[in-house]
Image (cartoon, rainbow, N blue to C red; front, side):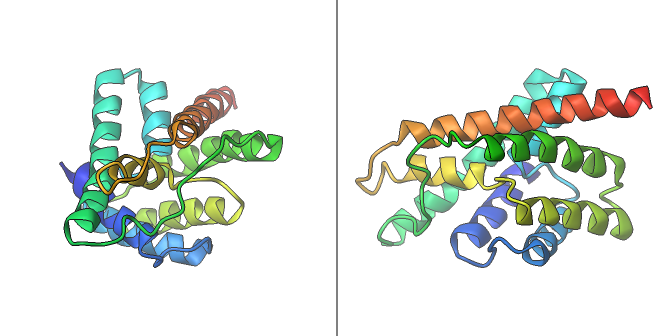
Amino acid sequence: MAEFWGSVVLTWLVIGGSVGSGWIEWGLVLAVCWAAFNGAHILPVLTAGSMFNSQDWEGGLTKIGWQVGGAVGVGLLAAITGGDGVPYPEVLEFNTDLGHWLTMFIGGGLVYIVWSSCDLTDLKGLGVAAFAVGMAVAAGMALTGGADLGTNLSSLISGGSFHFDGFAMFLANTIVAGLGAVLAVKVNESL
């Protein structure tokens, strides 16, 4: 349940414009969210890395479901309160840029190694993990997949349409970052 509420807070901050592409903004927001929700999995790309490495498919998919549910909840809340839909730019086409995919793969591995090595219940570990993820965002790593998918699904309620490319980007980004995490763990174990 912490994944749901953590995702609600993170999505609300992302779609509300409080979190841009700066590493300090992302670092602070993630540090606060992880501290408030006891280190909960709130980013699908990190949960995928954990799921692929631990082979805990049921637990990982459940956490990703909670994350997407939290993002959908924010979109539903916006629709219920009379908003004009969700003021977040949806992903409307599939990204074919090689640089994006290399960033997701390499960034997924590096961020996962740092995140999984830190104790998120300790202030020092929490800060290191949060700012490592923030720096990955500044380098171009896409971490708003849960918000993208959640707003895409919730736009159906406010008369919008479902964009399959946005859903495909969420899946592809999550899987590629997760595979990067698997490779990073294998390389780290061999050192």
